[in-house]
Image 1 (cartoon, rainbow, N blue to C red):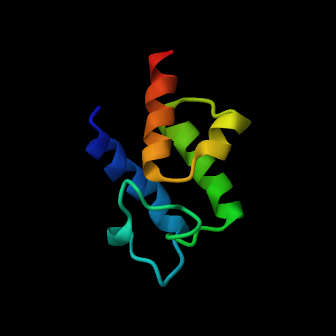
Image 2 (image 1 turned 30 degrees about the vertical axis):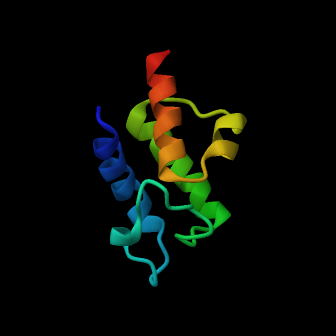
Image 3 (image 1 turned 135 degrees about the vertical axis):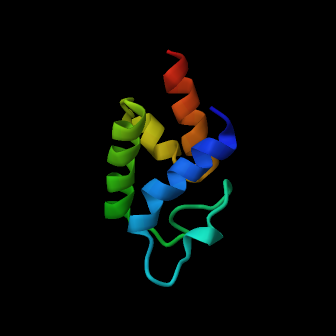
Length: 83
């Protein structure tokens, strides 16, 4: 799967958790979930669970701590899918 395809799928996962004042179109591969997209920690946990379900992977605490941007999530997904 290409990075752009992952990004589009991540946008679908993230969209329900965005606050009303942030548009999904503003999300790029480098958007910081907390600082730029204003996603709170509780919603970040929901995003982690949705990513696990969507890609049939298990994210460890170390992985979750590294999930700051969409690029980070894509890199983690790709590394988990190679295992």
